[in-house]
Length: 399
Image 1 (cartoon, one colour):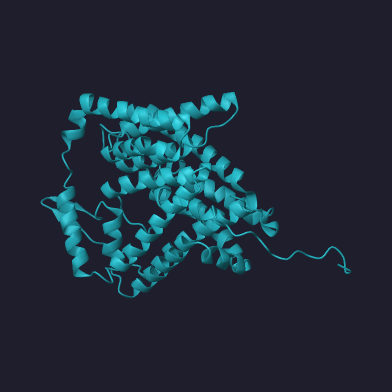
Image 2: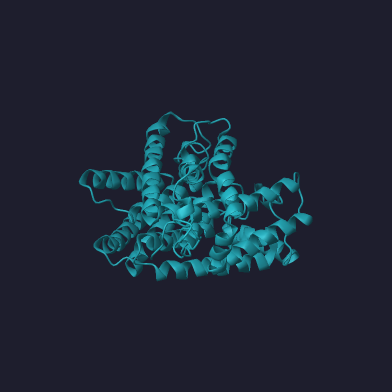
């Protein structure tokens, strides 16, 4: 793809802040140094570094933003989804309903921030940011594994991460997704190749030790289908390792795979369908709390991103997301010869599998799940940025 840098944005404090904000949005979910109030601290930093400058630039460069949205059907559908989520606040339940309008604004701020930053810095900078974030997340995974024997959590037999990675399934999903994109970004320098391999090893070892079957399945499927969009030796090797690993898991890990049964997923699915049938068009409203109860067990979401979206915002919102999601798949396939295109495809496959098994709300304030939903969408949208055409100041009066 050919994307020229946006002359008016190439330098300056807004782009510098956005770059830091994008990096922190990724790594902060695992490295926020405030264990007692990690979520609040993380959100405040993301707001200052990313959302504020992105929305400020959007106001100043509105014509270019309109062109980005107009030329990208995925963004048109996402914009419609965000607008509908705001409308749904008219009938949403729970406390602090008006404050929830910040959620679609945060999503828009992130998508705009990524588009502005890639337009200003180019694809190489995007790849470098994702690679550096992958190394930082691998360091967090290694630290969590080393600290595991000395930590007291609600899951004594399963590894969890630090900061906002407070559950084994969520921890596994995030580190698995990071491994997927880092795999497509091998460096050229020998010393960094060693770091790259060690980082992949840490991420995959951590994902395995979470004992998250959803993570295992998602990683397995991505590795298995890798040759479809990555014909290199590493893509073929990935598929071969998936077959070998799958056989080994069935032989040696069958007890782990069967120990927790199906974790009430069929019963949760049935209740979720019943809730959708009750309000198929409007849903409950953005971020309206609800509970699914099976016997003595209860959950605050449907463990499936897609049914949860239909419960909150109705079937039309679900259709908007599904069409946008499949357009993203087509976008990744079109650019499968580009590392960023292959990252989109890998994350799409991984997320589609993982979020069927344990996916909370799509529209929430920045959380680890954004790395499986909004990040691949942002990467895909940036693959088709319009060429900047903002007029420049004349060199002289005669010109």
